[in-house]
Image 1 (tube, rainbow, N blue to C red):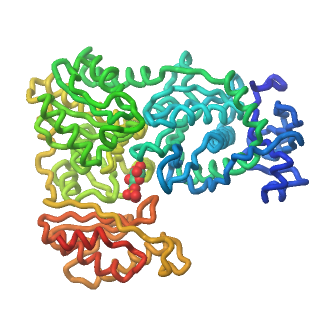
Image 2 (image 1 turned 60 degrees about the vertical axis):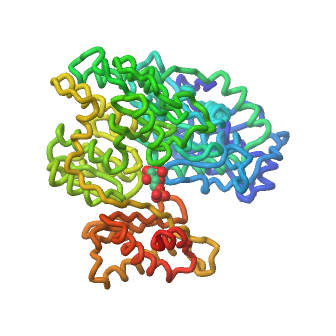
Image 3 (image 1 turned 60 degrees about the horizontal axis):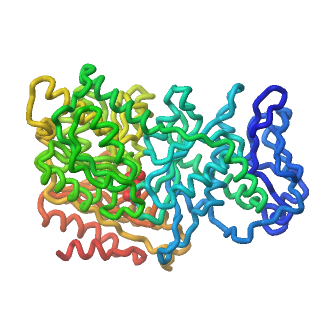
Length: 614
Ligand SMILES: O=P(O)(O)OC[C@H]1O[C@H](O)[C@H](O)[C@@H](O)[C@@H]1O
């Protein structure tokens, strides 16, 4: 419970408990042994914390001069938990997400996302949030937590709740939820369900295997970016090394009184329903008679059938894998995955449905399949969304990731009259770039990746796979309202004129980080050297032309196609995309890359060598 001091609400932070034992054993604590600790993690406005060794932390208003200074004294009785492993927190960063191994049993993948680690990360997010937001005088800050269907979800949700409650913030648990719903909870104005929340945590590892898990964080300004995640992990490392048996026990007791549960997915779903009804001129059941199949891949997207499509009048029989199952027994929930797309396509065809909709585990990505089994994912989904958005906003700029096809550019610019801004890979990069363009006067309404991530300006730049599908449903409903039949043919017709390559492939070339040829360089530096060399080779080959505008890696046209070699956002890998109108041309492009790659012994070029051999 927060203690009320001088009539103001103050936030307690239980997690700053640096014990004597810890100080003796950890270098940081030794450094800080006789001095007040200046912890970034506790630098919240105007509050000094002191702990007198009892289980209660006391907050005192503190002079502005001393903001951020924390006195952290711990009772000698506190004991370090022997089972607390050393954890390299910064290794848990994955771009603008946190990802780790939460379930034991996979060889070579030791668990590094334990409950105490999670508690420390959630406490660190709370401290970060307290720094960012001035606590409302009338209430404590609150944080919503939701999760996808992973087997480790419940225990991580409980641990994260303890971290937040221990920091003196209120916790609102949503249970099974989608990532976009979590962001949305920072925007919803609805007091009776404790919205808006000040911050939100989604527990998910997207489409990764069952043993992984992770976190995404939101405020009403959007998803946290890389620097914020790094900051949070640094704070979490400090917090973690100060954990004691007592502090962890206390946080459990504290958490039980600060946790509320809310059925937020019903609220979020009814917003989606309202959006489709509104677009259809306030018709109650604009999808009446449409047969639409949902494939949630046993992730969190099952709600879309029963809570969105059915209230709108659609028939959803034949929908599959709607039940959450964190072992993902049917297929990987990933609209880029070939087996997943095959599965939904077969379901649409065998049920003679009008449309199929598929989500990734946490529903921030999606794709569709038309009545004839035509996959509407990757470049096609971008083309389709561009057609819809450009009808509404003629001439607008469509921001995409870097691996989009040349045919897509021609389609957006020549057929649709828009502008294609091919930017970098990474959904956050794409969304942030669209926001930046608007801020400098270039109108953009859509930011979308080939991975199926997509965000619209009209939807607060929320990265929302379900909302992308709502836009397709609006199109179906409005076409029928204006007398057009043919079900999802209306969507496929929008793709008329999109040139597609005969062959499109993505190969991932690994960099062996332990190879002597790195000569002390990081894999990134090594990868950059590969790219530079490839650029030089391409410049000197008259059959190859470097893309005039390119924001990442080396993109080159030639032999009736193109290739892009770039550094992965996360891994020691150089992903290579090749598209061409014949297999022969694709091989020539592959050979050009291979001749450059062969000069770098730390590269594992097996996949490329096999590709050019065929
Ligand atoms: O650079 P890569 O390894 O291909 O990964 C890039 C991808 O990473 C994650 O999955 C992000 O969610 C995507 O937005 C991004 O496109």
